[in-house]
Image (cartoon, rainbow, N blue to C red):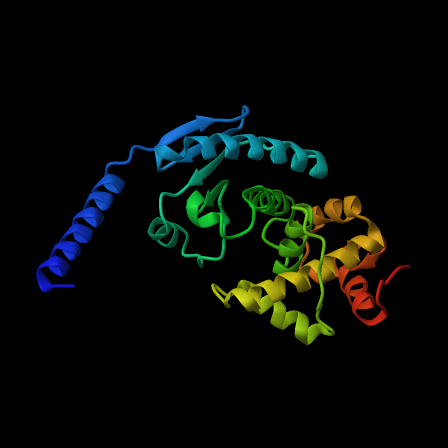
Amino acid sequence: MTRPVLVALVACALYAAGRQDARAGELTPVTLQGCDRVEVRLDDPAEREMGERLADLTCRHLRRMEELFGQRLRRNLQVRMLPDMAAWRERTGRAWYIAAVLMGDSIVTQPARSRRKLESIERSLAHELAHLFIRRAAGRNCPCWLDEGLAQILAGDRSGTGGPDDEKELAALESRLNAPDTGRQIREQDYRATRALVRRLIDQVGQKKLLRALWGLRTAKDPLQLIVEGRSLHKRLFSVLTNGSGRD
């Protein structure tokens, strides 16, 4: 390839990139109304079809979570789909392998084109909605391993292996879950562990009773001393770790 041709190609590429950046700066956000308490904000109006799907899925899973928790969401819920990964990093500070995140009473998602490489948008929405309801029930006292494991199970992922064997490992798991970015492989391994723990607790007391017990975390000085069906969460958890199913 001759030098003049190479220079021309580089110039064209820079021009195209500049046009794309200019277009991104000129985007006018669009807000779509879902059911009576859900709206979807699209920073890129070209994603309208995906926005309508987001609204439908969010309304469907919102009704499901309200039924599971026996609580109606009082405030409107906004789902915002960002236009690109630069906006994702700037607004959320989260890694590329996180498809969506709950921020206050809003769910923020990656742009559709990058999110398709990760988990399904339906599971992502269900997961973040579960977090919203868990935190409304438990306040700030819900351990991350319980919050994360329960959100995944309520979103439909019930497989899990590799739960911690003692309190020291549980504390290490909790610490990693609270870290901003431990890497995708470690995070997935830790998520499997949280699912394993919560799945076994559900096997002991049932999902409905575990969800109802979350309200007690609001006033609990030590979350692991929360009484669930006559036994502390600590005793239930470590009977699970030492005795397998931990059934009474």
